[in-house]
Image 1 (cartoon, rainbow, N blue to C red):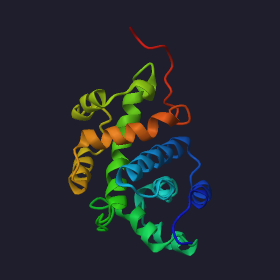
Image 2: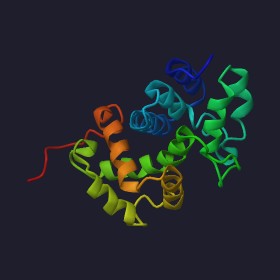
Image 3: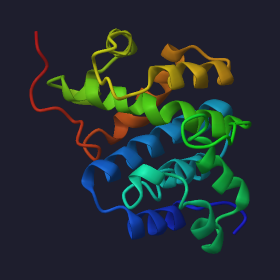
Image 4: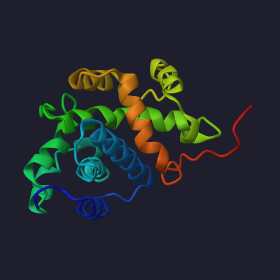
Length: 193
């Protein structure tokens, strides 16, 4: 295949990922990556496919994440450039595959950033539907909120992209919001006030 397709990414991901929280995380990253592709004028489906497949080996090998990705994905026919993009989201924590392209830099950045968006949306009656950048930034600045999400990596990624974190967050929110129900972030109640 010339580039990873969404159908192939879904097939490969479903062969490895069974835990619901990991499936939802993959979808969060998928939709955020589609929005980043739109921002850069790139192929949305391709970027979504890479985003969907980025944690391919995580469920089976959480302590060795990305160490069991390259060989099986290449063997499955995933193009080397797409495998490299997936590996690059582990830069400085799992490997030394530095993000070089906008695709790689975006994946590196939105992987952690979508975790904060998800956590913030869960706190709101309307979920993702009315989560604005201003509210996201309050949560982003609160280091105790979604403490496992690595803000330093997000800021490093934003720097690589030459973008402000609030601008990347706005793009990700735009990409994720239409899929709020599928992501389990549709909220539980009516708007307050």
